[in-house]
Length: 492
Image (cartoon, rainbow, N blue to C red; front, side):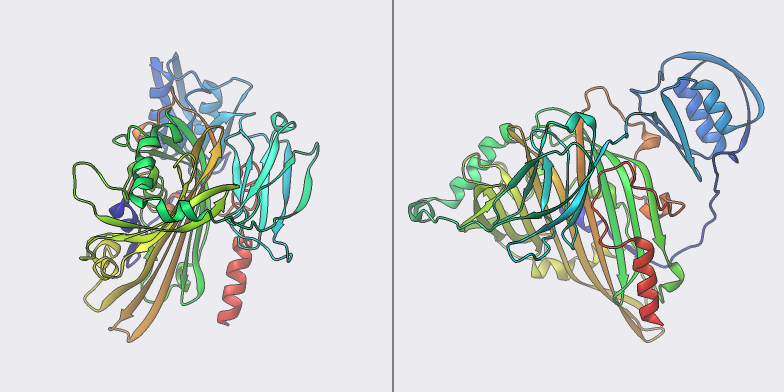
């Protein structure tokens, strides 16, 4: 996990490149002539010859079917429509991206939106919102606002709002689009002295390890997720990118099987010209963040076959999801500059499940992290990481816990001796898992997978104002365009 965190940042001088932009009616013309070719092979051929990035669900189209094709100078979109004539399939092309999907997959019937506030009517950020006993959810933004998109199947369900230190509030799903103001009340935490006094922190850690298999998924799952990364230079936004991705997550008792990520669609707003002397870009964001799962990979927990890297301390109790949790602080046994962290975990007092954690690079590790953060710099440009911190939480689903949200923040100071200038870059990356389904028969082809070397903004070709209309995401604090307009206005 440690290098996965640190490898997610790339700082270098931006190189220019050209891109091809296609619309629904201007896709490239191709000539194809094949007999008895598998549909999957034909789609791959179209992808290679046209340059289109084609994504599809193997459960939607008959990829193993065999067909003949003979076309000359035909637009790609027409070829795809010809080989996929089923009425329940739609083909969407945005610039150089083509998505083939079932028409009903992303259809949403209900929009529940509003604001979550505390007892003083102050907005509450990062409140977890979930459909009870369903793998669907979202969180509030920094202004306490939220949007939750549901289907007809959720009409008899219950929505729950939960936050650390507050009583969970649940309400039935209304029969129509709804705007809500939800008020959460604080919980007075009873402190059973005998538990705090005599509960050995190492026993808590050991119980987490013993109970881990039954507290987390034992099956392969497909998660639909929302990923956002934002970069500020000297306080002004210079890069914001957002994407819907799919993640294949393997059982928690199989940590040797790593997650796979597929890019579905994205949008961005980037002002490269506004970056002054150096170009700060984030490498492999969705790829690395999909693997930041400390309950699965056990990075901050002891292993039987190795000396302990961390020491633990019980710091009291708190409430999360209306459940009492142990507050377990951890820090390196030897802060020797290795990539180690310090922070606090919240472990359920009944099931010993890890529910959430907040942590950051230790002081000495931060000093040594530069060689991992900075992938390219000139002799005259020096960068110094100021902090790197992360938070992760899980949400309840029936009798287990599902990965819910990961947030990473870092700050880097850059000194350009050549131009005698100094700049501060701040990067924030967020991953929200919105929906889970079974994934026994789902595979991503290598050509579909988001790679560690990919830069998200390079995978996105345009800004789409209607982008999020069919997906559960974190409601933006402010529309991307308005963020940049206000940032530029301040510059002027």
